[in-house]
Image (cartoon, rainbow, N blue to C red; front, side):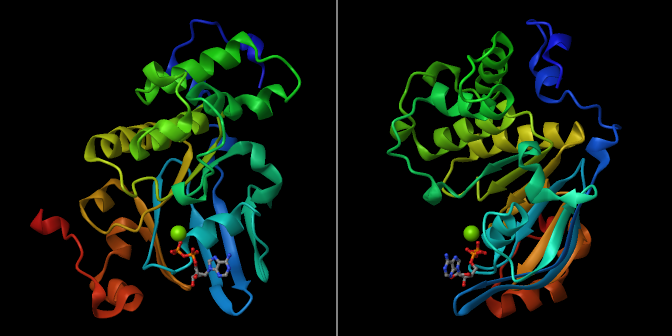
Length: 270
Ligand SMILES: Nc1ncnc2c1ncn2[C@@H]1O[C@H](COP(=O)(O)OP(=O)(O)O)[C@@H](O)[C@H]1O
Ligand SMILES: [Mg+2]
């Protein structure tokens, strides 16, 4: 990225969504082909193939233990696969990590790490700036705008361990925005957070998708929040279905994924 093209007054949308939606890069889909993952005795994913489209908000859904987190980690090369490929453009996604912002499940983050909100968001700029170079004016501006976007500017000097769950999730979203990535991966960002925070986060996801970004979100809730997603990937070790939300949320697919256990939100009834 040529930072010289930015004016310090550039607004948030231009900063974070600097790729035009129609650009070649932003129109690249992620192609997951025949991915398998085995944890010692547990087969977590079997032969999963699907496509994640740019410019869309895509949810990964399925019951507890279905392999949702495993699929996200396997895509990013964070765990070994027994087979398969994940391509972004013509190269493995895991070789293009600088284009990806990933926010793991909250339970996997070390909240005792002594970082302030500002530190956590500036970590999103490290790949742009390098560890040993001073953060540029542009980087500080991008980070400040990202914090503002999630409504957390007043908390910049607060240790992250002292925040509520919803505030922590917003700070990690700000870090992802500060990264100016093309692909955004969030694992259960809505677990245990309030409605107001959920609405703020969905607004930002929608803005990112509208700007041509790829937004992939693990979401175990089949309640009303499901209607925010354009596309869904329904898993239960194997891929049950993927595609548009309406196609995926058929009674038959849900039954195959959840058995008789599911009470799900029907849009007609809302
Ligand atoms: N590190 C691990 N070691 C062994 N088994 C694991 C590990 N992580 C996940 N599993 C198992 O793999 C399966 C899929 O887990 P996960 O991807 O976390 O599911 P989900 O995110 O859909 O709840 C589950 O049976 C889980 O118990
Ligand atoms: Mg999970």
